[in-house]
Amino acid sequence: MSNALLWVGGLLAGAIVSAVVGIFLGSTLEYLAARTIGAVWRGDEYNVRGRWKSVYSYRSRGNAHVGEQIMQFHQVGRSVYAKNIGGTSPHRHFLKLKIDGSYLTGTWRNVARNANHYGVLQLRITADGTEMIGKWIGFDSNSSIQANNWKLTRQ
Image (cartoon, rainbow, N blue to C red; front, side, top):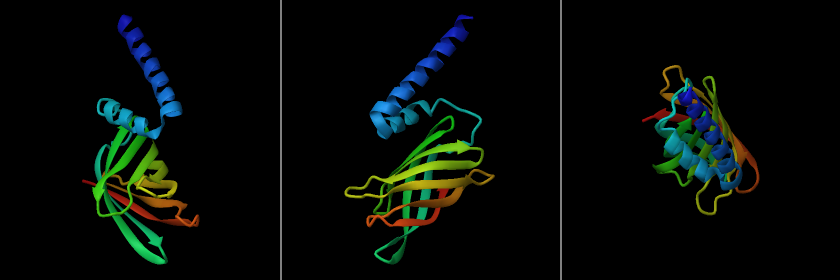
């Protein structure tokens, strides 16, 4: 009985801490919490933890470009957080996603210096779990809306 009470108490404490972090401290601390807690919390969802090669298409100054970066994914249950940890792209993305079945849906933000790009994306996890393929949409630096492909491959 006491183990069950400790488990429920820990679950409630975790929910409260998560709510406070989300409201007051923002996405950076959410990412750090996912990085710490996600390493030990396993759910029935797809496991997208780890490094992924990110390839996305975009237009800049009228020209088509392909951005490539390496992203680190952390996951707590259905919540997923990812950030750029390298690559050749001038962009540095931060992703905040939710898993629903084989779909990830959420927001992306370019956190590179002087960047003002933000939007949403939806990805579908392939059956073998090695790729996520989808679309992004968002504003460019001229406040025009762009949309294009985004593919991630597990490293």
